Image (tube, rainbow, N blue to C red; front, side):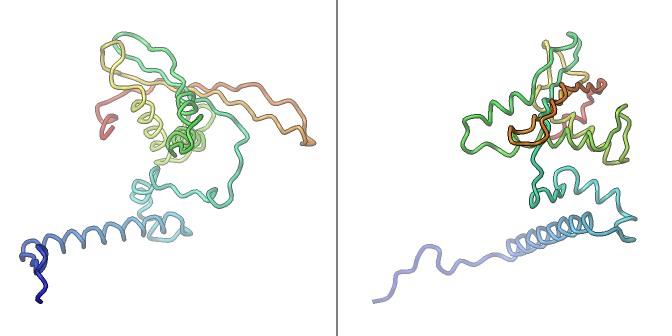
Length: 213
């Protein structure tokens, strides 16, 4: 007895469809190769090509694809950092909102907390802190600018476009840092320093800051 043909048997693709699939596949492969190559160059020792195109590499890699070897050699946190933000609009300056407390509330009791709730805000503040001095002056060129934009956009995404019924025109952040006390069995039982407050200047908000948020 002859097998009945299935509805999908003998399907043929038209020439335009094959061309579209081939081009799409080639674009995906090329884009993947460019991204992987940029990541390798960003981590590789300095060479003539990476030095000549450092700005383009930093723009592609940071901050979304930043490489961090702490994944393989974790360094336990020795400080608790609480990041707060507030916005300004025509209605006046809003109150401080504890963004870190929101993340902690989303983590507590959640057996599968998101990576964003655990690390996004903390790593953004760490990125800013490592690229600015104590007077908030940039110390790392393009990376300092990226850190500003990254931290600002995280705050804007969480606080929204309006305050008091009017558009947000500026945003300000501050962080309270408290050293983690040593464990009871540690020989170093010196008292932990009190909270250190670091408050950033107001950052103006433009239409470009809302792109893709």
